[in-house]
Amino acid sequence: MTLILGFDTSGPHCTAALLQDETLIAQKTEDMARGQAERLMPLLEETLAKAGFVWADLTAIGVGVGPGNFTGIRISVSAARGLALALNIPAVGVSTFDATSFGRPDPHVPTVPAPRDQVYAILPDAAPALLQTLETDLPVLTPPAPAQLAENIARVALLRHAETPTRPAPLYIKAADAAPPRDPAPTILP
Image (tube, rainbow, N blue to C red):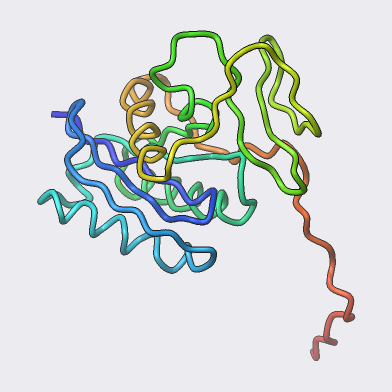
């Protein structure tokens, strides 16, 4: 039996899906603009418990690596790496592009909405890019709903978990929109 837990916090959601072999046996999704860091682990535990499993039963983890919300991606990837290390199982990083394209053999352009009316996309024979406008004759795919996204992440991980595992890493296409604080740092007393 293969048991794969897929999850994602790259958008305004916290979502997980559990596959037993190729069958979806549990799923949980919560829409949230904030709070994914506090909610992710309890949501994963609830997903496992709903199907009657515990952490030690897992074969592998699939995690959404973006592109998407900078902090959200770091939350999921950190959790996946920690769980994989603690459970001694592989963690498979799955881009939102791969999860969006899962099950679509026809030529298409997977996209992810980006800030300021831009779009992250992978055009044929090109690297992922942040685009102002998207011009293509191919069908354009946007990410599925969060529940389907988590399921697709788990399905991609099911296909890839036996490969030489690597540590999942965030897929950042552009730098974070963070700026240093305006106030000077406090003086540290010796």
